[in-house]
Length: 147
Image (cartoon, rainbow, N blue to C red; front, top):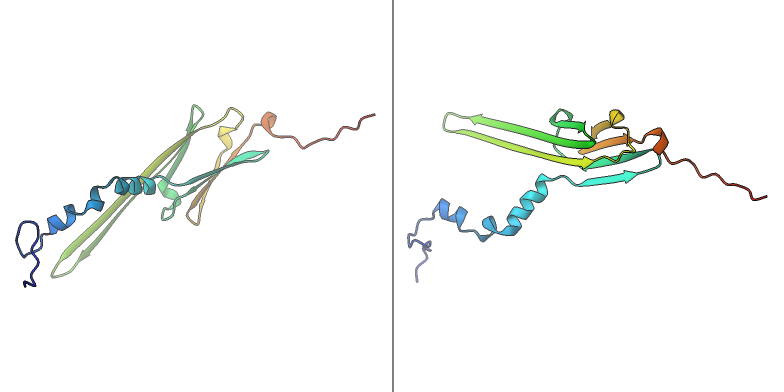
């Protein structure tokens, strides 16, 4: 009985490339779905009588990473983050980098005032307040007495 396991090529030495590419999980559709899922932030949209609120869950960013603009009643929220880390030692050099970005667009209804959108980033959540135009605001209920 042999204690040495051989890989698919018959060699007893492991291959880093075969370990990487022979995994079914790497090329499975679920892997791609999972990656896409992480690249699009979750969104909550709420409306009240005075405004719309949009919240996007985007942890790990800085407020400088965001770009929010409105053009032709299309609100576009995007972010881009690049990081590089370098570690030099007398025996080795290691350099790691990461890049992440997203862009989401929303068609604004004609009832909003796109010039007065307010955006704040706090605790990993981007908050946008989009006020309604005066004529579109819901007025409080008024009871009319029947005489």
